[in-house]
Amino acid sequence: MGYISVNVILSALFLSTGGSESPGAFLFECYGDVPEPNEGFIEVSMGDFHCLGLKADGSIAAWGRNENGQAQLPDAVNEDYMDIAAGAYYCAGLKSDGTVIIWPSGDECAYSFGGDVTAISMGDYNILFLMSDGSVYVDGSNEQGQRDVPEPNAGFIDIAAGEYHCVGLRDDGSIEAWGSDDSGQCVLPEDNTGFIAVDAGRTHSLGLRADGTIAAWGTQSNEGCIVPEPNSGFIGIACGLRHNAALRSDGSVVVWGILRPFGRVSMEYEGMDFVQISSGDYHLIGLKGDGSVEVLGGGSEDLITVPDDNSGFVNVEARGCCNLALRQDGSIEAWGSFEGGRISFPDFENRGFIAVAAGGQHSLALRSDGSILAWGAGRWPGVVAGESIGQSFVPYPNADFTGIAAGDLHSLGLKEDGSIIAWGGNSEGQCNVPYHEGRFVSVAAGACHSLALTDQGSIVAWGNNHYGECELPDVNTGFTAVAGGGSHTVALRSDGSIEAWGRNDAGQCDVPLHNSDYIAVAAGWRHSAGLKSDGSFVVWGEINTDSDESPFGNVSFSAVAAGRSCSMVLDEDGRAVVWPER
Image (cartoon, rainbow, N blue to C red; front, side):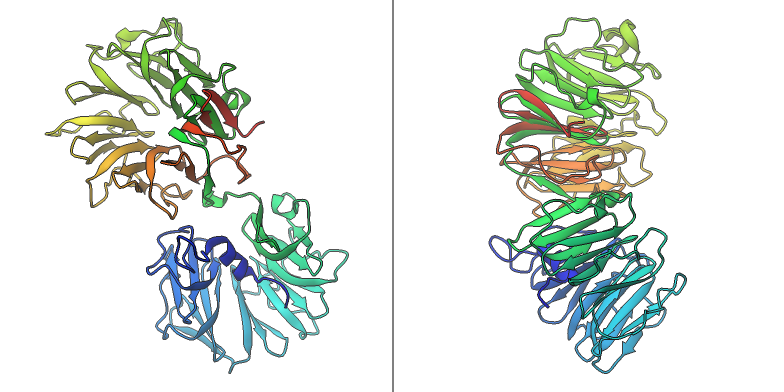
């Protein structure tokens, strides 16, 4: 029909065509691990939290959230499928004999049309069948008139289902829309001609014209209805919940709208040469090899604006809405904002520091003599606000420390003998350091949980475990680094792979495909980041940006860190750069 179908454009986004990956392999892991063997896929379809993949041999793979059985394939023989559709809660597969299998269901639900079905589409509460005679059959809810197909019910060549509305394309190039119109999703374009494909999102719709332009209508507050310029050269469209993807004839893909429904969109930035990364609540800081810093994400101006002298940095740390950067001369730069006053650097000699740590309401700095300086909010013992703070507020004796970490309201200090000292807020037991026979070699802190890496490569975790952030992997060996987020944990193995566990409401524990060659990890409030050996970094989960475009050219980075609403990287000239600009 001269256009690329919705499921095929999703395939273009997520499937490999060869090269270093097997043809038909998934390039990103969406909503869980892709079943092995990850090859031979020719089409994909995505529901709210689950995925379907159609293979060249006619079989289907399903994965992702499975609380209702949507990722559990039905009892029907898994062969001879020619089309797939994933809705919000259900899945469907069309067989070559016209049988449509729907799952999950109390009993296996099958429709047999004797070969008359040519395509299917599934929305939140409906399934649409396109028949060989050009008619449309709709099953499911009729709460908003979704089953009332406009007359004449004939001449349809494409169909799409949204939450409570349906869209159909006629063979004369016009579009019909029916069902709920509470957000304008059924208010068709004035020039309702020349269309060759349609798709439906939750409360908006897209139409692709033969001239390569796209029309969008529906929720006016949805940025997905503002088609980016130049609006030309498109050959395929796909609707997301609040964003869209379109394929151009040159093979490029354009994505627009709100790109982080539940933070499930992974972003990869290449050619940055990062050497360190750190995550705040919703932003990320990166240190480049040249000693400069970049900040990625979003937030207040004082958070994303790096110091004027953006050079000579050797270490970065982010937490909440605060950034700390350590210079080669041992001095510290701190910026961002918090009512506890942690950004106002204390009245002490600003030199001789070798490490920094940013907490939720306070900051820590480690001097070369093994002592710790703490400043910021003073709600808890050991963390005192304003200019009255000093080294004496760190547990006595304030000496022989080799490492530091800061949570929301607690602090950790690693001693030369491999022991750990913890102080501050202890509402979840995050300061109750467990007994361990061996030595600890590094410490990390989440919001209300604590982490330590042992000299045997294992991890010890304690404190808040409401989301499983302290439930360690079955194979608890071979780790070289660990980071704590809001309520999740990210750890790096010696083979360069990453494991993540704990709260996953924003996909912060869904490590993307190509899980190798990492050299550092960072965790923010609801996102995670990994730094690769080539200086590039990968971010997944929720970070405050509605753009998937990197603001950087082909430059080298040496470190990265993330905070609540923006990110920062350090470039090879020692400059700190914050993104996005506000």
